[in-house]
Length: 277
Image 1 (cartoon, rainbow, N blue to C red):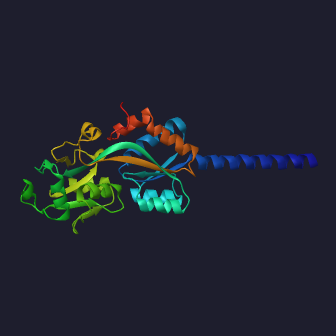
Image 2 (cartoon, rainbow, N blue to C red):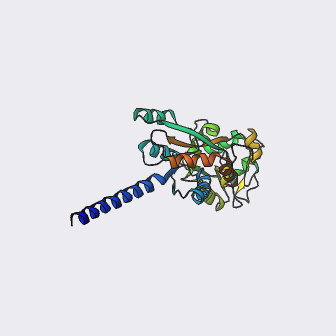
Image 3 (cartoon, rainbow, N blue to C red):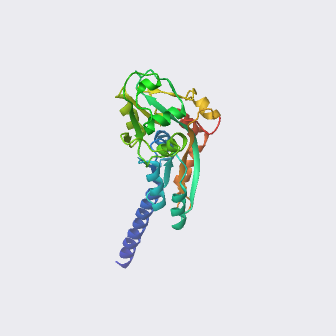
């Protein structure tokens, strides 16, 4: 009886260890990604491909660059997608908490003004875009368009796209008070596609036939012009990680995105890869 009891105890302990290891492995193999909606199309494509070859589950939330970085610092995600660089304040908060945040560029992007396909305006200067968004220009007729009031569509302040637009176009000037603020690139496209008087701006990967891309300073928003630096509203896209808490699965995923297969998916998502393909 003692032998049987000993064997039962041994088997129970062995099963418990296996169950613990299984749960631990499951937690370690799940990668949580939060942040920029601009980077979202890249993450979705890369995550699907990475899962097929690695069986690692990637949980993705498009909540805005600012929220992604905040979540990384407080430990509620493994990777923060961002369409702008971390701010000095965010770096200070991370440093005060003793976290080691690393910035990883994964692609190039352009921010493109968009209008309804029926809008005859094809080109706008940076100065004209600023004037539209600060309210100095209020009618499309002033820009060679129809005699209609301009409906301004912008991103909310937590968006990395908004921060880049603010820095490169607005030069810290305030966006007009009646602007329609949207939480994502997708909702900007949807809003502009349904309003003939509207203008908005989105990441290059969100361009579609439902809206018309506008040239900036007579430069067409193409991958070639973005890569060469000719297009005036360009930026890099990032993934941020906490090196103190970086899971092996998260590192492998980022290595995949930076590799040739991952960069092909960057291009397939409509963005500009870091490497020549």
